[in-house]
Image (tube, rainbow, N blue to C red):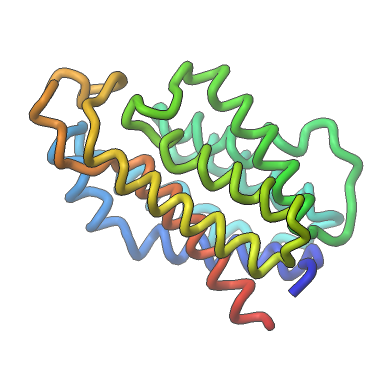
Length: 213
């Protein structure tokens, strides 16, 4: 598949929301080990709201889909995760001209801008045991895939694989942010919940596009 139209992008985000909601017990289990234990419930609350909102949402453009999702997360999720995941979907489309279709190049551009905004806002970098450990390699994979001439299906699959490796990498390092940083060496061997959510999002996007072919 080369691109998605705005309605397909909306359906993709509904699929992402469903996957996050289903993963709530797993995300909660992970976060209870080195966090506050509320990551799963917050993600479920936000993406349930996204799922419901999209049922009656008729986008004028692909950018409006991302805007609506990000705004909904900011309004409903609460806490740091709401701000960070809302930023991922909103900040990348702020200065873009609206369009009816999204190619791999568009996904790469949007998420590359979002990553920069997220790092500026949250101050985290790869190696800090946060969502950035999965998001940055996924975004770089999108960019590389676009430059290599991959189609959307291939590019999103590559990004999902990179996000998975980033998620797994968080098990090998200490945390420098949030409650987990107080665990010191004890956090090694445990997976970051935010990075896990990033992987679930990219895997859901890749699976959706593959299913549309």
